[in-house]
Length: 262
Length: 295
Ligand SMILES: Nc1ncnc2c1ncn2[C@@H]1O[C@H](COP(=O)(O)OP(=O)(O)OP(=O)(O)O)[C@@H](O)[C@H]1O
Ligand SMILES: [Mg+2]
Image (cartoon, each protein chain N blue to C red):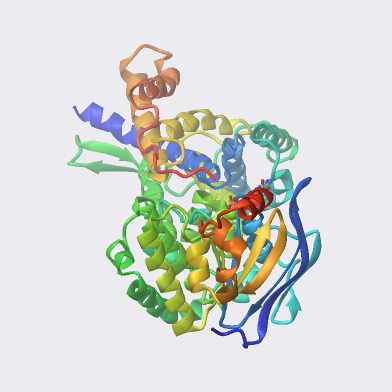
């Protein structure tokens, strides 16, 4: 639990749209150095939009994204990567015809040529986290399984030497077992390398287990925020995210009221 | 037999030219999903720049050659920046029409330049009319023009291989063409990379023009040869770099053989017959990619 580090990333009333479609409507959140923060939300809640706004893929209409005390919402993605914000996109988004190793090198694209030796060393380190990637180093990344591609996507982001890593639904399409394995490794990355993590997830069970602090996002708005230990015990969360049903009329009524969460 | 080999050799040389122009098509297509119909005209501009370098500026041939390539590299980049980039987000059709327009414009402007005009010009090369005979006096006779075409193409391919396999910028070019969104996420300057691809493609076409000039002439319409390079790209499986070159070679050789053994007229349609056969047998082309990910 490290919620006492300084705040390195903060969103203040951020609003982002796709043309006329407002995807997030005034999102505020804080991320402390060294912590693991999760944002939970159903399909279309705006989780990916939050991450894309942070990494500069889309510019917000309103509000600010403050990183290490500096507003970054108008900067371009390459600059943001260089400041130490790396994005593991939803659906992996690997380069299918490049080899695994070349994919990793692209993760290090923003790093100066002078760091070549360091990059090689870090490639060895990520092979330590995910040994399968070493075995497949010279194969086209498109030939990896979904889980292996997720490992590659995480490793590729690590090669940018991030201070904070944004993970978009790392559990997507993975078996529960593989999901747990991947989460255990990202927790290790957080502990061993001090990389701060902002993880958006639909899989609340897993996210709440591993994260320190959580936000709940519903149609573009944050509706709840608490340490994960607290969130895990909340009735609403239990019911709608963890599938632990409260019986009786009250529960059903709440179910109807909150159905949008699913 | 000897005659046959002779024809194959000149077919290969001709095929290299098609292959290079096809390569220009493919690079731009892979990076931007646009077909640049001005590719042949970029080749023509390369020819004229070579002409200007040698005749007007008095540069030695190979210096003029190199200068023309560099100039076309920058010209291609400028074209992307000034004309294509503002069209980002427009339908593919619009962009294709614009490239056709660029071609017309280039041909038109060239005829207005006093020394260039509508005439045909001879690009003076130091190896004009040289021949190399292999296997004694009645062996295989290769013209130096053809040897230079094949050698320079081979060099260029080695260079491109090194670029795409062993340099960060080259790998980034491939990455960007495979998954542009992911390239943005990695902090790859996608727009600058695409600009570079246009430059590279223009320089490769110019190279084709400079190699071709000694065996044809330099004139405003020489770029129409692009109409045969396009089938080469299709045969190779549009989107494949080795495919473009192999496709070019196939079309060059078939065309040369058809020109010799078949009745008049077959030469010009040979390329299209090859394409039709290829599309019937292997619709994705020789090196068509199935793994390709659409973004
Ligand atoms: N490219 C786009 N163009 C238009 N609307 C979009 C686009 N991307 C997302 N949206 C809309 O913005 C809203 C939020 O989308 P977002 O992708 O952020 O949701 P999400 O929480 O990540 O969902 P999921 O769990 O399905 O990934 C949705 O209503 C969606 O329809
Ligand atoms: Mg999403």
